[in-house]
Amino acid sequence: MMKDFVNLDPFSGEQLQDLIDRAIADKALFRQGKLQPTLERKTLAMIFEKPSLRTRVSFETAMTHLGGHAIYMTQGDIGLGKRESAEDTAAVLGRMCDAIMARTFSHEMVERLAAASPTPVINALTDYSHPCQAMADLMTAQEHFGPLQGRTLVFVGDGNNVARSLAQGCAALGMRFILAAPEGYELEQAFVDSLPGGCYSLVREPARAVKDADVLYTDTWVSMGQEKEGQKRKSDLSAFQINAELLRAAPSHAVVMHCLPAYKGCEITAEAFDAHAETIFAEAENRLHFQRTLLNVLIAEGGIR
Image 1 (tube, rainbow, N blue to C red):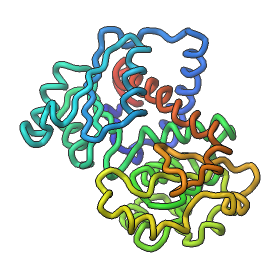
Image 2: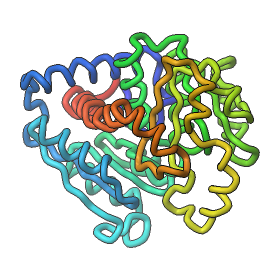
Image 3: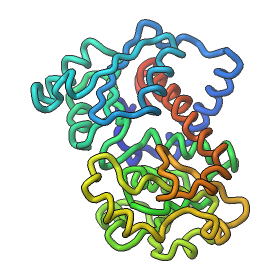
């Protein structure tokens, strides 16, 4: 039984597939007005070092849908790792609340919270990984294509936290993950070595990378905390934009995904975004549906089996 949801690599393909299937089923129940208040009188503590539209709204709304409550706390509210250690914070919140969600810069901070908390801890983004986003993405791909095994996802741009989680998820589910990135923006070799053989490729030419793609995926070139490197990053990644020319190199059935916020004219053109907006906003909505299922499994059912 897995208490926490910090990275995707501890989970088997069967466990991740079950979460996706359950999230799709729960989404249907939600639309039929048949969700049950399984988290009535339960509380989620939400720690935000980084602000976010989708993360806050999706987790708060998910708890409300299930009859529970969420508390929003910023770094200024609790002084995580400064005024009070991660261990003491987790010990307190874990005794007052039924789960902890953390969106932090440091991945180690979430690992420390998970190790010290008696209740589930969910990684809602760190500089290292973003497992909730990746699972919502893979859920969206399954809704569009059906079974995911054998499908190809191409991440175009910076090998970042979202790319790591997508690579882990794709590997577990029998998909191929291709990173199209310039030198200096690839995933670190130690991480690549941790993936099963044959599921990961690094391709330097975007058009060659997407020739067999089912999903073209991109993210902002300048994440929070990287603003000082902004101009250099935009210059380095300028050839890795999703645009009409790159889409012509991909199969006609391919879809574009973006975890948002999108900076149109940088990592994706407005034209390419608008052509795939339905998929991108469905992907954003699925953060709500996947995380609602995850909260139910971790809190009401005691963990991931």
